[in-house]
Length: 519
Image (cartoon, rainbow, N blue to C red; front, top):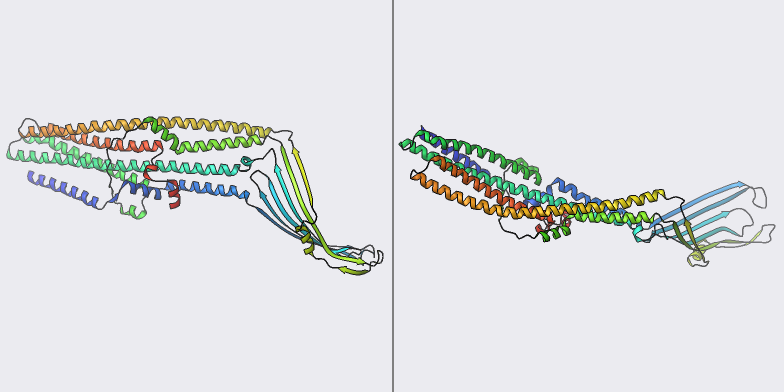
């Protein structure tokens, strides 16, 4: 009966290990780079953040539109009729037909001024007598220039919306970079934790196998009478305990897989297959020399949060300059130049009383237009306009608010710099400490192996008991797990240091531009 039980135990063990091997064969194999690339393509958080630079770019394009020329077209026509009160004016009804058109191009210039070019024309016809030109055509070519000299003057004032939107675009790209950095670190954290959980399961399985081997050996010893049946209770208890450890380890593996699946956001087809994930990479234990000063300097130059706050400070300084400019009175320079032209049918009368027409010298609209375009008649005007408001309460409130916003932006920047400094110190300390911890746990594992070997040799000659062998087996298992955890922690501390320095994307050849183009 005992042999049957032992055989069943071995079969169950083989079935379990065989199922695990088959599961591994049907697994989704991923390298760390594969996991990162899939995440950047599929993660919803990244997809949401990618849209912000696109929205900012559209806002920038809209802000630049005010520097596009403005075209204007107009046409009008009217007809007036009124009773005639004099036979000298008309027979019964006085009729006037009038039509006009205008073309206009207006352009805002970077200094805040406006240049306008316009061409207007009209045609006037009436049936009234004694008209010397009828119909009459008129055209005027006109150039107007208006430039504010105090309030709203200068490139910064005119380009303020463009500069702010350009800065906002830079901020959105920095925010996207920060999101990518956090996402990449989350992928690495989930990936290496999955590696740890799977290796932890393997160690637990090996530990269970050792306990089962010892139990089988003890059962054979009981069968031949060299060991009392009560002496195998410790081995049976340890087997049951280690089986429970495996159940917990398997749950940890599944949880780690779900965590990585969620971050990567695998396609629906792969999710339905529910394949276990098999990490292809293993953590490397390599010492990395780190200087706190160099790490801090790198972080100050590369951290996207600091870049965004510096850009925001530029925005607030620009808003302060604008608010200060709005306190000035309005002084505007206006200059105009226009060239009119008139043409039409010249009517020659026999005398000034009878109204008899003896000749008509024809003239069309083209004559008036030629005069205007040929600058036949030159006219110009220049003026200055000063507007001093009696109160500027709201403008001064805006200026005071802008000063506070600048001060607030500076404080936010300094606060973030302090936070980065603390984060860098902690990250550097974690790397240095975890490196030493790995060496300590590696030494502890090597000693545990030697202790177990020595204890097994003593058991063979009857100088110890099963209890101590099982205890040393568990000590070795714990030491192996602790060493693995220390290596994973060291690897993650290096990734965290790269994130803290703002180089985690650069070291993996990931850029914001590449991601946006791939979208």
